[in-house]
Length: 264
Image 1: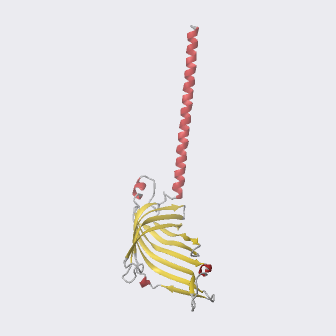
Image 2 (image 1 turned 180 degrees about the horizontal axis):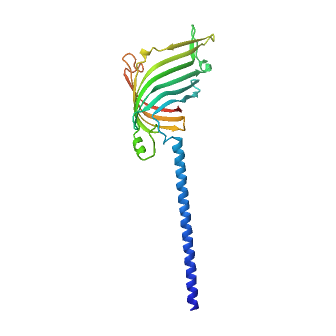
Image 3 (image 1 turned 30 degrees about the vertical axis):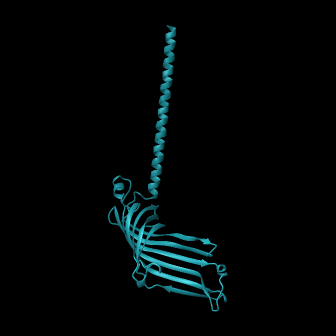
């Protein structure tokens, strides 16, 4: 009888210990799951704050840019640097569609090391070589953008009617400014001279049509980033083929644009 009682007592204690251990593991698992959910929620909240996902915006004025340059080349002794800038205004028609008007601007500067000219043999007359150039250009643009996931995200409560999202767009561009300034160097005497020319607006009749896929995100209260890529078709008039060896009046290229800047 005593032996049975001892076995019963041991079984009860063992069962209670297993139950207590199981309960402790369940509580620990519940705490871990809750902590993970809180962490994901906090991360999502921070991302939504940075991208202003829940802030409604119907008009966005943008000023941005991104530098561009080519590496220094020993063979040509040439360094090229520049800046692409964007000034535009985008207006929502409805949650999914917007219209955009603005200007794409480019600044390029070329510098040739004079040492690169040392192997050139001068002729009987003066020999002028270009060692510095500065070019400015600007194109007006009009675009229609379709934010294809915006309506769904608004319905799901993940976004407000704003400018953060992926889009497809149709854009038309036309040059409105072309300015070139060059400094020339006379190889023998070392004299320099500067020339400048601006192309009349009527000669810049080379409109471009493009289809783009892109993503735009707000960065805090005043920042934004806009990336897009797509084919662009440039049209030339009959007197201005895009190079002397090709009489084609069209040119198809892949256009990639990346802009970061201020928006309000």
